[in-house]
Length: 271
Image (cartoon, rainbow, N blue to C red; front, side, top):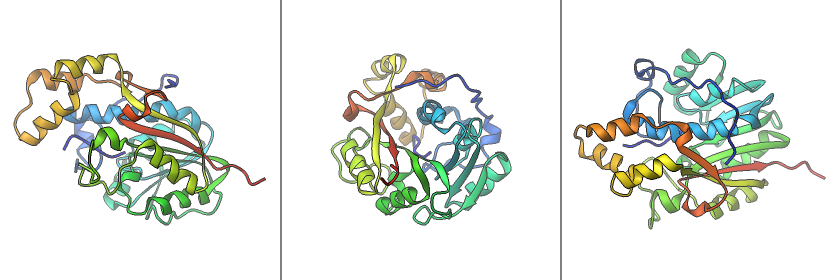
């Protein structure tokens, strides 16, 4: 659950946003997004929609969120999972999750060496994290190792084509390698997975209207103001604060035009 400005729909769930005072206990670094910050609301909702839409795949399962960040997503998963374990390399994030989200069993560790036994979890969730890793292939092999036969890896990551268009080097300084759909598929298959679904996050109708309103790109309008280091115009602030998960949609069509890629990969049982 990273990134910030510096398909099918699941049943309605309680995903009440914490207050800004609560969220401030974990600093906004630009490497991750946190709930409750008005200027961050677009990015937070863009991440939240993936949790919401894929939550049914965690129902009744033993789930690992690898790279759990602030922890709001792991806490959402705890609404439906039999057990949810979070893992993060940042000790401050680990301590924050332990204090704020007691339903999540929180571990401190390296994603390249998952501190879990072989075949010990039904589902691995990895949203907006793989683009930060130096050895993406090793991480995916570790996910395959800890999953039960038939287990699922749920991945989301920025689509390189639209996130850093025309560049080999990511625009975000916290990213090591961004991927397009074909590259993500290749990595997953090489790690032993079968890619069951490759879909993407897109702007729904209201956000498409806001793109037009703000000069063609609602995202660029936010980034420009953040980089300028000046107060945001009232209408931009109001529009950002008003974004909700329903302003995004997941769909398989037009995958190369998606904002974020979302993959469901299966560890097939050995015949």
